[in-house]
Amino acid sequence: MKIYQSRSDVPEKEKWRNEDIFPTIKDWEEDYRYIEEGTERLKKYDGEIHDGTELYQYLSEREEISSRFNLVYVYGMLQLDLDTRDSLAQSLQDRAKQLGVKMSAASSFFMPFLLSLEEVTLREYIKQEPRLNYFEKDLFESLRYKVHILTKEKEEILSHLGEALSAPSNTFNMMNNADIKFGEVTNEEGMKVELTRGMYSKLIEDEDRNKRKDAYKAYYQPYLQLKNSIASTLSANIKTNVTIGRLRNYPSALEKGLFGDRVPTEVYENLISTTKEHIEPLHRYTTLRKEKLGLDELHQYDLNAPLVDGVNMEISYDEAFETIFKALAPLGEEYVQTLKTFKDSRYIDVRETPGKRSGAYNLGVYDVHPFVLLNQHDDLDSMFTMIHEFGHAMHSWYSSKNQPRISAGYSIFVAEVASTVNEVLLIHYLLKKETDEKVRKNLLNHFIDQFRGTFFTQVMFAEFEKLTHEMAEKGKPLNVESFNQTYESLFREYNGDEIIFDDEVKYGWSRIPHFYKPFYVYKYATGFASAIHIAENLLKGGLDTLKAYLDFLKSGSSDYPLELLKKTGVDLTTPVPIENALKRFNQLVTEFSTL
Ligand SMILES: [Zn+2]
Image 1 (cartoon, rainbow, N blue to C red):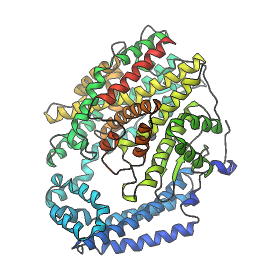
Image 2 (spheres, rainbow, N blue to C red; image 1 turned 180 degrees about the vertical axis):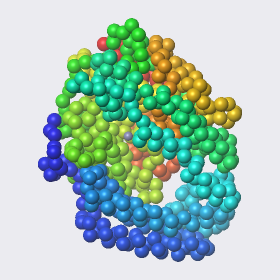
Image 3 (cartoon, rainbow, N blue to C red; image 1 turned 135 degrees about the vertical axis):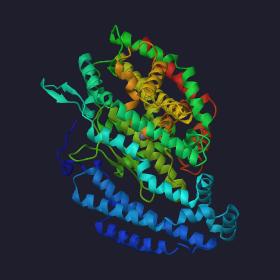
Image 4 (cartoon, rainbow, N blue to C red; image 1 turned 90 degrees about the vertical axis):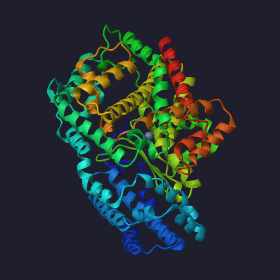
């Protein structure tokens, strides 16, 4: 693998073209000025919308200005991600943010105005001005919230309390990111050093059990020390959420959490109950782990230990691309050919360089093209990251090409489907051609671990959120003890009895930032299960399945997520997609056990 010390050493063809957004800074400045003036024009509509035509004029002008703003914003952001020390990019980004604040202030009058309209009036406006059809879905989507909006005075009180109400979540994040001090571990040179998160994720996968154990203990140390404070932030967050839900006339906190995606609570409950009905293979896998690791006792810190050693596949960037093209063949010629152009037209920034943002992402820019950021390490994991991000990028590309601007973006609920389908196709392709037992085992283990992390753990978290919110709704106490009890019994139920319950296990709830964003993580699990379902069908062939899937990729946010998924044959209101995914997991475990 090649290490680059400077961006200028990276070959041009492996760097993305930011100039596709603005050829020069001068062009950026021109748009910036245009938006500043536009913001002033938007303000003038306050109190001046009296009929369909005026409403249309406002909305179309706002859309035009905000689409230009989007370009100004992402240009600085993309530039800054390439080198976070770049002061020019930093200043572009700061200025874009300030502009964003001005823009939202200029349009802040609109939502209260819209919500003050009666539905009949809005329909009347649309009749007067047919061009409003374009905005119709969004307008009525906002009106859907009307029953949950309070009187002007109450809304004002809530908005003044905004900062205080988000204090539990802010406090936890401050503790978790800034103040926490992990315990010490011994490094390669035999010196005692303070554990970092980066070190932890490596050490917990180490072959040496003592290293795993030390890292585990050091990692949990601050959470155990801060248990009462964290129980208090989590409890306050849950209770606030429950109270706001009640104030805003939601039947439950869960209903409030699912309202935006228009997901019925049955989908959430069904995810949990179906998973628990078919949990046995996960228990079997835990036992298998203990056997394969040759341990008398299985602890939580053994759950990520490598089961297959000595597999270090080196795969260059170009080789990975060739494999990816073959693996994605079930998605048809157009898909693969388009992806090829992403590489040739330089939509991808490939190499790790000093100051570059870590990890990987796709950012679809409606008027331009998708941008994919990678930190390529020329190994198996990097190949999976590539195909994952390409799944998002192709989703952006198809939706941008086939949807008007207003519905081109897709929701989080469906986002991980496109990326996971690609990963499943890659696993399938690699397993089919691989004959080396060790490599096969490694691939199966990769897939199983992904299932555990993206599906089972998230379902368990989802159930924890549901239970703790229900406890708050029933006025039951939320404290260290009740959190511990709830978490421990869930952990046992999902992972089986084979694991030794060290004290740390039951404190798992205290380290999860997502718990401060209630009813969010279940989407990882439903997305994952949907993707497994779709990929299996695609592999069976069938042009109808392919067409339906491509139509899904083209559909952006033209409908609610459950409806979009239904068109691919995934109906999450029934247990079938979850059952199918769990069947696949069962097969994987069986196959793994025979190797
Ligand atoms: Zn993703």
